Image (cartoon, rainbow, N blue to C red; front, top):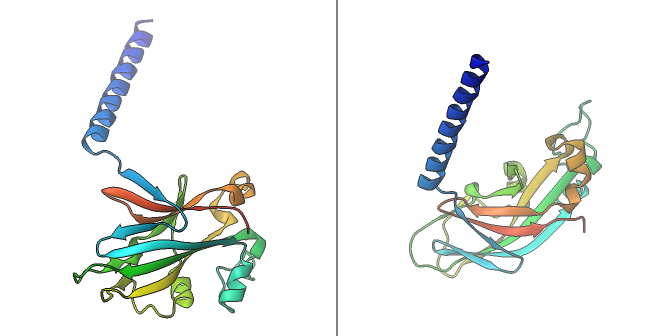
Length: 192
């Protein structure tokens, strides 16, 4: 009986210590404040203004139309992956240099997320969809603007069977900046 009481006391002390440590860490290093914007809205990032000008969501068929010959990945037998088991999101962004400094806009920090799922864009596909890009660190002149398509790719392998059944109902976000303020565009979801 005494052993059981001692074990419970040690477990309680350990859990209290862990709880205090987590509280201290969260108080000292809080999570970033989230700012979420929608379709048609603009965000200022340094000397650049980024406008969320369009969103399309489809199965893998859109890749065959936009980039003939591009293959997201092979299936288990080395054949082309079934388009019904792929989802592609294309976020259209209008980027305009509105400041006068020599700053750059780093596209490599942009990512996609939905709940606990997150993914960077496919680099090869990014350049195929945006042949005007020479680099992903934009350095533009004041007043200059550019349209880009930011591709989000996913397959059923990244989700459980139940999650994949509801994939078209999830809301996805384009994350532009992570810290000290998380800035993102809400893309919605659904085929169409």
